[in-house]
Length: 398
Ligand code: NAI
Image (cartoon, rainbow, N blue to C red; front, top):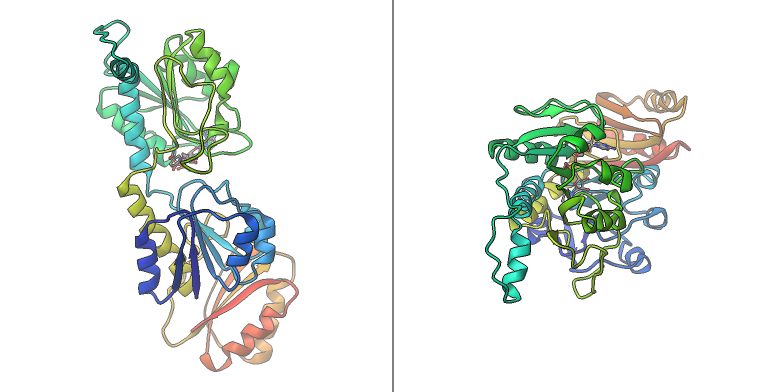
């Protein structure tokens, strides 16, 4: 089996795949669509980070592809629906850089509150401005977390341990950690927080969720932090809110148009504004996070390839079934339409196959079926199931 890893994925990933007998090509850059399609010939596993855009045409033209690993948290660079329709399971690294993002947010809250970025710039331009004016401790202040998932909860726990009050808003009911308080609306968080930090995914609902009206709903003199995705905030409106001094500053790590490469220049309406910390999408960028992700994603991909387990897949129904050594396992991804299972059962019964273990999970579009059967008959069963019109991809594991 062949693995193609793009975008300078941590070398640990290559080592793990090679230890499991895969051939691995590791490239430092992202590839254009045409080059990627060319490179994907004969490749079963593709690994990317956040730059490579994977649309429907790539899945259409890459017949051999079985699985895609996003060595990051966000998966909005991939057309997940198209991947599913073509039978390609997609996995990400949901926890690898959680701690790194949370630590950066805490550092930025203190930096904004003490105007460290501002003082640092002044010192570098030969200005000595020793002042306590408008500089505050964060103890006793309120942090408002929008999106109380892996990162949001971690930020809340750390903020509380520093003596902050924690408010949060999430569209899904969440158990509050510690003394955190759940708010029923975003507005309740915005009105009552000294620091608002965003930890939502990029979805149609979160696009521009912080526009002028929401920014104006924030407390006067409060701060906004965005290390989620660039399109969540209306950058021009944020610049306006800072220029008008309604907000006392901001920390922004993600932008609507991020440069493809480190050599490209970058411009934003936020440049040059007072007490605004700008960072180049490095929230999850630590050696520890890269190494965690370099291990986390290959392990889930290898389990999918060798065992069929779709645990933690972001686009497939989840199935996990322990595999017996003396059986062959047939993996069938099919369109979830009426009659498909009776057709598969007909094949099994006509061929007289003995099914030792079976697991099925479905969603609205697809069904994913694992069948453990006798080695003697498995190839025939697989071929017959594969030829059904409803089958998308069918594999057999020895
Ligand atoms: P997660 O999936 O654990 O949490 C996201 C939370 O947002 C969930 O609880 C979800 O219910 C909630 N949510 C979704 N839509 C919402 C809405 N409209 N309003 C309120 N809440 C909503 O994800 P995690 O791991 O906490 O990451 C959050 C985001 O951070 C990622 O999607 C990614 O875009 C970004 N990220 C940025 C990094 C960086 O380097 N700056 C690194 C890692 C992640």
